Amino acid sequence: MPVIDPKILGRYAQKLKKLRLGVTPYGKAPHKPIFLLTQIEQVEKGRVSENKFFITPEFVADFKENFALLVNTRHKSNFIQPYYYLQSDGFWHIQTRPGEVLESFIRSFSLLDEKVDYGFFDPAFFTLLANFKWHREKVFKG
Image 1 (cartoon, rainbow, N blue to C red):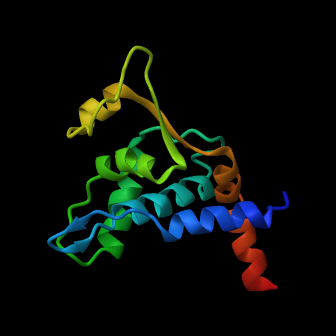
Image 2: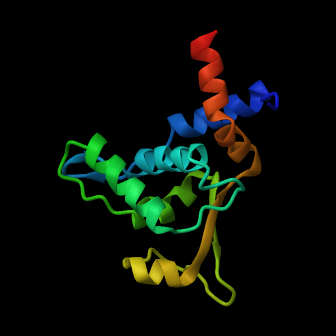
């Protein structure tokens, strides 16, 4: 397994600590943390092996399942919000389909699927994400 540079780990740990969560009548929006957790699961389950997170039925279903299991407020499990708004945190990016442009938030799933090819992380962050399970097991086992 690759050695993770502590400076890179520290930089992304800070970005995660400062994750911009929307404020709602029900409290801080939980969508981005649930989205990130779901992305980790996609990698661990072998559904994502390169730094391209396509919008698939499995990805959306896992997000909704995680949301239902972990969120105990009246927030709605809206997959579109974190897919789009995580860009503002500086390590998630969206690759649109040829000829498409994202100028503002997309409100419908069908429009998101029509305009977006895939999302991706900074390469260094994806390396951390792809090795998360190995590092977690190493830390907790020994």
